Amino acid sequence: MRAVGAVIVDPACDAVVAAAHDLRCQSGHFLKHAVMLCVDLVARSQGGGIWKPQGSMEYLAISDVTGENTKTDSQPYLCTGYDLYVTQEPCIMCAMALVHSRIRCVFYGTSSPDGALGSHYKLHLQKNLNHHYEVFRGILSKDCEALLGT
Image (cartoon, rainbow, N blue to C red; front, side):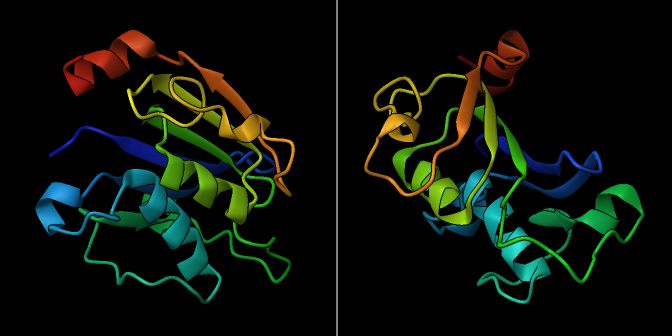
């Protein structure tokens, strides 16, 4: 298992919306990055999503994390206004998924050789994209590096 975890938070109400960890090795599915699973869980909470939950090992609904149901009738489009916290810098696929889902901010702990937000690319700074988000790196970097064994 890769020790990459991600959490999507609604900063307006300080609540966890989705939490997931990398499942590429366990599932044998190369798209099951922690970030992709989080975005998919948000989509599922809004009537979409593609992957069926397989218990807390895969990903958690907000009610599983907080014990509360915060669903409202006026939910934003996917991740509009939400923040993402992730142990490792997202790859290009995940970074583009965050553009398409309209994430507000990304906070990551440690860089990645194929990272798309600072190490290899700076996707969020591309002027021709129709959505941009802020990026902050180095959040709990020593802890994240220890988890990842880097």
